[in-house]
Length: 547
Image (cartoon, rainbow, N blue to C red; front, side, top):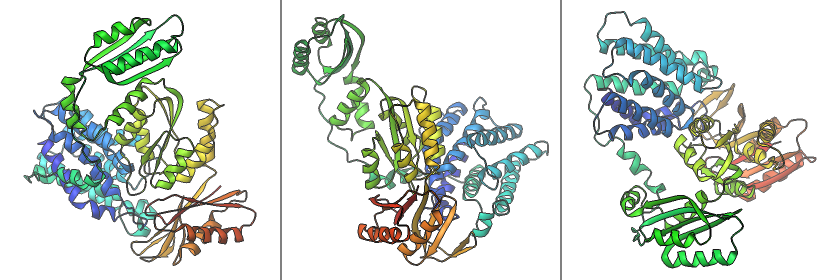
């Protein structure tokens, strides 16, 4: 029944996600709370649907782990923590009663609040806390389970209705908190499931279809020529002569494929796919002692691996082998951004891996974990470059044990650029972290886009189609012309000690227009350097930074 309620809750959220997206305070074309929460819960839905023999332990693990790894955006991360706390209480039981629901609700709220560094009232957290409080008060009310749950949900909706009184920005925009609305949508759907509503048999499948355009094309299944993945280390008292290394390489190439030999001091790390591991090891013994020998039967694993990842090419496999076999470097860098131009900038500055995402497409915790796995470094600096991605980045950090992950809480792409520019290889990790934290504090950002509806924010009247400049702390400027609005925004962003103004033009704003804007800004601030770069970002015409 709990599994059924979870699925009907997810189904209800999925049906209403677009409406929840529209509750975004800022009327910009990137409202994504409903989408983030849906993708978060659907990650768990798939795991729940894969359980063969339903029991509370496996169900709790599926809900907790699935949502944790699939969490996107702040609302998704908080939702995953609510699920995590709830399932901690129920996972060891075979059935749930009213006192346990109260305990689980309280644990859910406690877990979620701990995950947020600076919790704000008037949000999804407040709604969850209100329901936990009423759940505890009603424990001894002597009512049936379904009435008990209905009372909790009704009270949650009452708290949600009061969120505009707790957050002025909600009241001014005339909306309730979108994360709180998403939570209540899930719980209302769960209650419907308790009362007999059926689950759509296609639940979860639409998500797979929706992302088809972003999936790599499956390739023909390659023939497996060699059946054993063989890895080992040759240890020698002195450096192995290059001629002997070349001879070993020639032998391996003749008797296998995907040959990798990496010299490391007086050791050679070797990887090869072969049909005769014994002959390979005998040949290697001529160069020194062998250790860390590992032989995997690829014939057994081959079919399953191809089914799970049919698009993985031989080149991908070779790169992964090289990456894992190579010694880990001291420091690596991961940046999150959307736009080919920004990707090029970050790679030029030394980023090891780019997570494609940002506004409208927040990467999940799982995406961040995958990126961390791709960077072969002992210490990894991670730059979310969006305030709605920081929590997922920190959640990923907490799940990684074998590497030191340093999350620099950059809220904008220009902050991420400035922080990476400030990296000094002569300094240790802690000093670089402190320098980067200081650097992002010197950057002010403005993002130019258009309004998708009429509203009023910060006493500024906004009409659908207006050009808006959204700054670090709210609306900077509103107008009818992109360049005029941008110029107005720059004036409001200027500190006394400004040295550089950067313009990053996006997909829907030409370089010619950006250069024209640069000339206007330079004319107004002749003593400050102005530069134009291609960001290539969607949604925002241009992104401005002043530092």
